[in-house]
Image 1 (cartoon, rainbow, N blue to C red):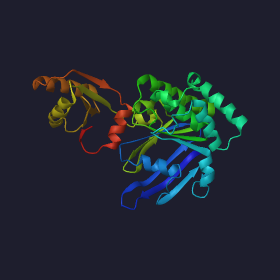
Image 2 (cartoon, rainbow, N blue to C red):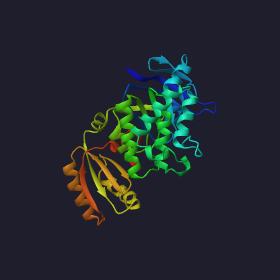
Image 3 (cartoon, rainbow, N blue to C red):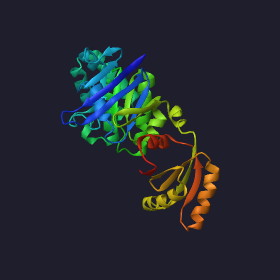
Image 4 (tube, rainbow, N blue to C red):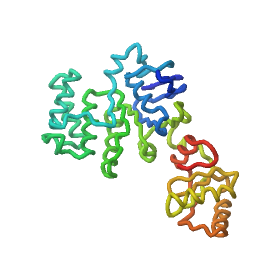
Amino acid sequence: MYAIETENIIKQYKNGIQALSGLSLSVKAGEIFSLLGENGAGKSTLIRILTTYIRPTSGKVTMLGRNIYADAAWVRSQIACVAQRTSIDTYLSLEENMLFQSRLYKIPKAEAKKRMEKLITDFGLERYRKYPVSSYSGGVKRRLDIALNMMSNPKILFLDEPTVGMDIQSRISMWEMMKQIRNDFETTIFLTTHYLEEADSLSNNICIMKDGKAVKQGTPTELRSFLRENTVRVHFPNIEDAKKYMGILKSSFRKEEIIAHNSAVIIHSPDAQSDMECVISFLAEHHIPFQGIEIAQPTLEDVFLRLTQSGKEKYI
């Protein structure tokens, strides 16, 4: 069963900007689905449509088997959305926030307390339950925000960049929380993130967007197999050197696609071993300083960069 299906969605705003240009995707029930795309790709517009805040200009959207326009009120009762900014009353305690949330959803008091106790225990929030939220760290506030939205027992949970700005320990805790929501609560998670390793680690399926369209959808393994060739990666001391020497390398390796990403130049190569030897000779001959060179298998980041950029010469 599909939790979400969109078919040829188009969204054009009154100012003429077309945010979505025939987007089609499908999300299976009970999976973590990640939506990836550069800023301006249309991710936020799609989230607003799926959460019934706005309507598309045209196209079809079904959630849990129902048309979201004909059954918008029912759909809203089945979903929850955690935005980038937390929506918690910082003057209240964790318990007070969760019980207040239950009243908004008209959950009976006994059932609300039962759900609250389970969520507090499952998400490791016991030590924070009596303290005002203003005293929590950012990571704990985010965990509480998600727990609050789970009080309504949603079938689909939308998470908009939930780990942005977190330290690595908080991010790992959040990853475990998302897996638990999927596995123990059987909730479908629709995730947007700019952290590709996060999508790779968590997702059952991933959709990469560009210019309002889905350019590729599949499992992380399927997406990585999209690039059949390996890559030659030349590491430089800094970003400036990578951009500088990328142009010089491009003049000698015209047939290969070359990308400058952070402090490395990445060469997509059908014959990586031969190309690496040629690159080493080229760098030595032109007295170009570099920190290291390696042959690497394609990563999800490589696939994302290939699908979302255009042109042979790329600075990312």
